[in-house]
Length: 189
Image 1 (cartoon, rainbow, N blue to C red):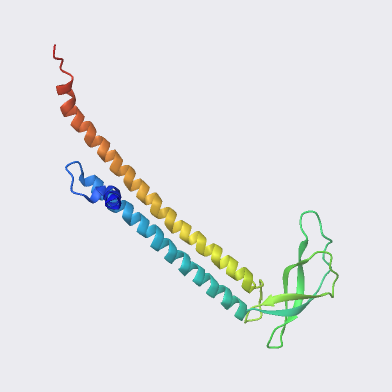
Image 2: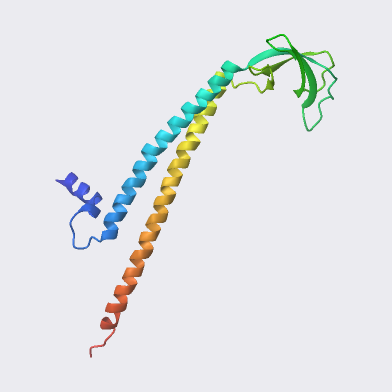
């Protein structure tokens, strides 16, 4: 019997009661909707985002290859600001042609040093793809951010809607008090 009272108390806005206002029912549905959107929408957004990011990272690992390149000029030694420097490198593409371009390399290397660079399918320089471990971490992070964004947007919109309902209730109470207040302020001696 006690459990039934607790459930009834939690769902008071849906009960038939002479004190229940239309705004109370609207607020109850609003809160339920916000929680459903936050839980289901947040989970869905996080899962889809993490899956899409993981797919992109897998595609990058499949398309990018590491190749040996030759440093064409000396690089300055490491300074307090940076341990990398931009330098010209030369490498051979999978089709056998030779290319030259600039990329970031470790500071303090001599011309003629062999370094590893990453190229795409066309043989152009690109960044290294994330390792499988880093890809999982990044995909998880992006999924969590997407889930939090959807959840935050749902709660923010719900809070704004509840604020509007509160303002409307206060305005109605003020109107009712304007009608009833003068009747209560008369003195009876």
